Length: 415
Image 1 (tube, rainbow, N blue to C red):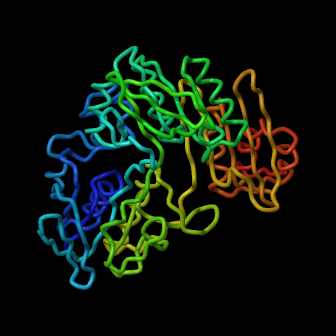
Image 2: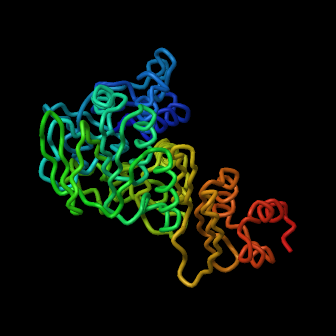
């Protein structure tokens, strides 16, 4: 039995290791398209902040880890899949047959349609090669513009600030973290960043980037240009599905998979940022491009590939972020459920915010800012679908009682 895994990120690596544990005699091949050992993109900001060296980004650190597990890691960029003949073709024409296939190709950064976006000095922060260029171009005191204040952008923000650059953040939405924070939370994070010396310009769109005087000039729709030595673009990502054209594998936003992580084609699975799989909160199929989901996808897909029938109950939309010392988190249906209720507590002076979303007598979504002790509690209440009983009324009146509600409800003493 030959298992071929396309993609050497967390989903692919966890899948390979899981396959080896459950099928000791099978052949496992990982195809990765970068000339690096398998690494985590989420570790790149730590590299930029110089908290780790390049080896610190690697997913596995033991000498000969993959060789000891008889996992064959190869560098190859896949150009197509022939599902009828069960072959994978790499650029250059090399074909590899498979018995079962896992698509774990992740995502790629999306560049906005701006004139000059491909200019020298405009970088993404998505690969180790990107990180090396940013390290070379972001010295203390350099003028750096970060385009995008979403989840990835704010992780990069933390790393750039640690480098001591003169940093300006430009976000075209009306607030920071528009996909994980409401207006109140996003505004609090912006004020926090500004108090730490980072300039934040929300509701601003870059219209052109031009080379000038050895640097870069960014024109904006506000009419106020921004001068920079380096621009880092973090304006979103998109699943890597282009190579699947003509393969007969159904895709929408990503590769559509069922609750076994299987595609519409027998023996072809997908996992991680490329997979559009069941959402825990809604039951619909969504792309959740976060590493915990990628890891769980890889594990569940591999168990099913190895013949151990294992359903996936769905991934929870969740984000936990530290922005210059201010921790923010969002879980589940943080924007609210149809017909549900809401409870809010805000202390702007202390940068603390808590918003709970209810459906019947359960918490189905939450936002938290500056409240680190609540992270595990909120996730637990949502994922276990705990009924709150009389705690529902108490939390409507004061959401800060959520820790007490968790302790009492999960110990079986709901009143």
